[in-house]
Amino acid sequence: MPQELQGIASTVVWWGFGLGLIFGFFANKTNFCTMGAISDVVNMGDWGRMRAWLLTIAVAILGTNYLAYSGTINLANTIYTGQNLPWLAHIVGGLIFGIGMTLASGCGNKTLVRVGGGNLKAVVVFIYMAYAANVTLRGIFAVPRTEWLQHPSVTINLPTHQTLPYLLHQSLGMELPMAELTIGILLAAALMAFVLFSKSFWENKENFIAGIVLGSIVVAGWYITGKLGWAENPETLTEMAIGTNSKLAESFSFVAPAGYTLELWSLWTDTGTVVSWGIATVFGVGIGSFLYAIATKAFRWEHFVSAQDMFRHIIGGIMMGFGGVTAMGCTVGQGITGFSTLSIGAIITFIAIVIGATATMKYEYWRMMREEG
Image (tube, rainbow, N blue to C red; front, side, top):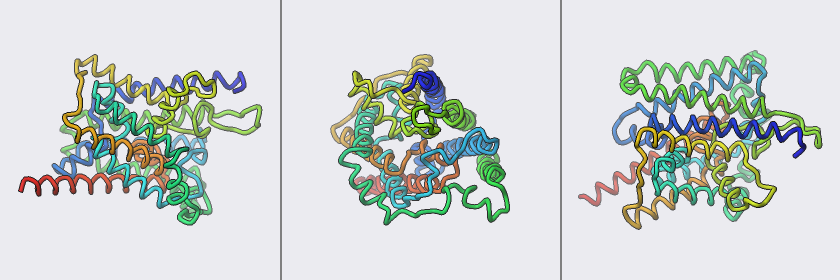
């Protein structure tokens, strides 16, 4: 990397680590968990943590689309907004991720939070999720991903970028920046109304804190990589995001970055592997959660209770690694970060993850009742 870009990369990485610290600290403090949110609704009819997730999405949508409207960032420069829509990959990947996170007792973010809290089961899940992500990116699992699920025959080629503002601004008679702001405000307002006008939501203020803080951190991530880290490479004379793995603007996501983290550890002495934005956020979230656990004396070692429990978590980690990469994101990567761009693919993935997790929880409840009966 040219010398003049190394300083930018360093800035991006350190910001990623710092924002990750805050994310991990507050995710642990507020018990923010997307799998738990779905479980609460399915098993108890409690919408508290689900509303926290939706509030996080609303805050992220509002802030991200304001950045786009103001010209601070360009949402076309992300992995979520391309003209090709691999709908089958989003559906299958989302379903598999939803099943996996249920088996593994939490999504990628919750896995990192639990690692920071001393959960040895989460350490195993992280390793298998990261390895599965790696082999789905470039290894044997990449074959079904690219040849079947992301094949051109099952990909819709759109005339423009796949965000709602891009697709609708002409029919609405608006310029793109105004459409980004208007649609962003309307969707965020609808989500906030559903969340904030519920009396039960205010019974636990932690849910409100989680939504505001974590949603704002996702917006900050877009600003760091899409504004501070966006520069021209003097060697290629092309603009790109400095310090990210994709060379595009990124915010928070945990499956592919977990794979990059494992690769960094494996190839530590290889000068071609460096700490990136995604890797820095992975470290940040884990350490931030650890700091909260130590500060509140909540840190404790947890382990598997049986071989069956271990097998279940290993399978869940593998499914999260494959599903998260195939769907181009997890419950945070697509469910918040991707959703904040108003990407069609992100919305499809979000729905598929919820369906996959819900179906798995229903099946497990049915099986438990059958065994007891």
